[in-house]
Length: 171
Image (cartoon, rainbow, N blue to C red; front, side, top):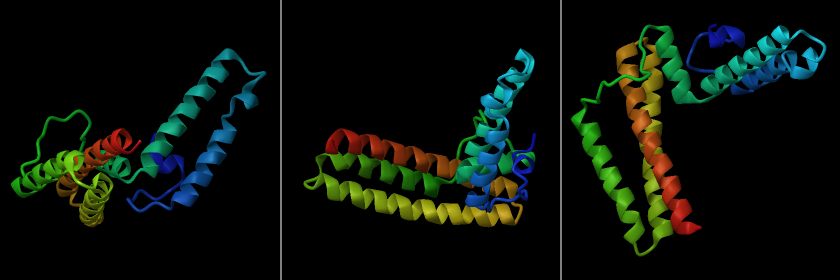
């Protein structure tokens, strides 16, 4: 099942999230368990499975990095479970510096300001990388876009670590 076809959307990175959400609700209503209350156990099970597939498809298409990864997989580039590493030494150095900055937040004189500055920088870099990835996808530069997705995953991990740090320090 192609997720884009399921939601009757063009196979492209740019997705109208409002249309996606509306179609998601329509599809979920169609397979809602209440519609199958008098159905056979087999039909009930199929409805539950279909609802799960619809949910997985929606979660994938509504998140830009997951959508990009899915679009790449449709074009023969699979990133799931891969062991390929990023070879861009400039990016890796940048990530090391960001990681050091993240670690220094705990000892900053103004933890909240340091966290906000870090978040702003990470957001700026993420937006730049996201735009590069979009350009690569539109140009059908699948391998380059795959590298950008890998990099965005690094950045997402830093965002998650910042959120955990903020929860711990600012709670």
